[in-house]
Image (cartoon, rainbow, N blue to C red):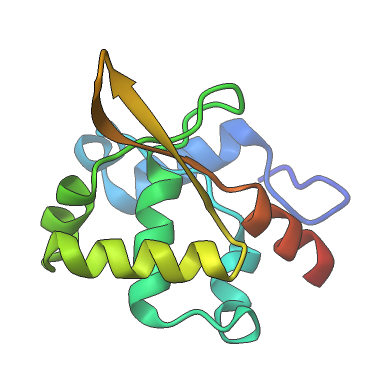
Length: 129
């Protein structure tokens, strides 16, 4: 496979390899762009397994730079098999550590969910890089 000077495969090669590794049916359901450093530096970032798990789900909803992710606590909780209150505590802890910022979203007068700004996490990873 063609390799760039940095040692990473070209995008088309990664997609082809992803389909081969996981199968077209699985790959066709989508994949998440995620910096490997987030996984490698979990301990250095001081992230528990539950905190990392929630962050991974937030990243899965972050499709473009212009549109921050906004999954509900219930959606995240259902995906990872914990209660929404537990997700709320984890989100609060991540916010206290500066990795995320929660911004409320409204539909008229009622709050629908929070929008999550992951700039703090991005900055923390840049410092480690």
